[in-house]
Image 1: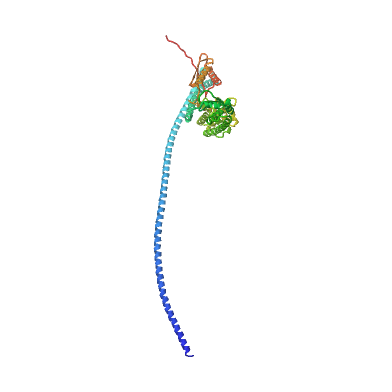
Image 2: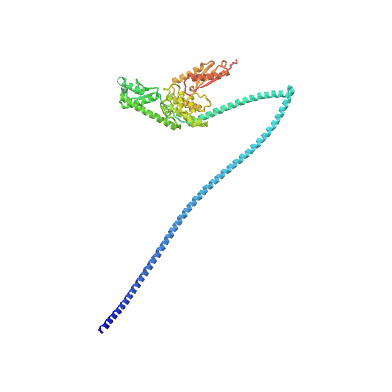
Length: 525
């Protein structure tokens, strides 16, 4: 028992020693490992630090490059803005210099004007002094004349004053009459020159085509056999056509054409289109005729409205009544002396507007009156009376202004001097109607009109000869000086002009010139 215990103690001691040795060895090994790890960690740390330094250097270099680029961009933008600012400053400087030059020129002009005004003032002052001196001399002369009159006539002061005033009043009246006559003649010459200038300017500004429309409607047919188909069996086709259109169809021996006749220009146009369609189609029979005429009637009605609207737009006339627009469109198919009434109305509208603006009046109102002046011709075949009266009634019905109504009703007789728009429209109407090529007239009618004009003027007592000149625009009347005095010559000229207005039909106006002269002839043998 005692031997066993010490052995156990010895074993435990050995085991403890072994553990201590093992622990020391482990610690030594751990220390070596730790040193290696520390060395490796230090090496890695130094590598990371070196990489970080390299990255920092690279970042710094990139930052420097970017900063340099940004600086260059900012510098370029600044330089560009500075250049624009300098250019703007130069422009303003040039403007300032230009204004300064203008101001200098104005100052120089003002200086010259001031000098001229001063010189004029000096001249006026001299004239005033001279006038005062002349007044003083005149007063002395009047006083001397009064004394002489008193001595010569033996009249008293009051009587002499009365005689002198009467004499001076007579002299003043004579001078005033002469001055009024000179002023009137000068005003008439100036007015004639200004009127010619205004008319010439307005005519030059208007460029329009000559008329070439005919008043007879004809339809071409391919052959004469078509005439039989137009007439139909026992004339039923031609009767159906005339009944549907209100147009007379004339089928005669004229080859290749059929003539349509109607006093209504719109009906004639509807008939012409319907006949042309029927001839082209070939199916000519009463039901087809009625259908075609109905289609053409609608087509013409649409064209009338569209034409009226387009003309109102082209001439600048606004606010027309729908019925007025339709009536204007109907004028497209209306002719007068071979002249298209619609084109004539457009011309008159343009001329009247230009004349009014030249005279400082309302051009829009004049254009409106000019466009509507012949509107009565659209229905003059349906209503009794002349087209001016019919047109004035229509304008009054559609609430036109009084100036427009008066211009429409009086454009052939502008005898009211205070209605300026009537005179302007009348002048524009005469210019449009009388220009070369505006209206056509057969030679026979032309000669007959001139003969009637000369014959009418020659019927008056005291007329020796009458000559129609300027294509019937003027008639010159030579009277016997023994039978017609200066006082009755004016009345005779007015009577002839009135007779021409009442008894003859003519385009535009006719000027009557009466000549009275006394010729004395003697022969030396």
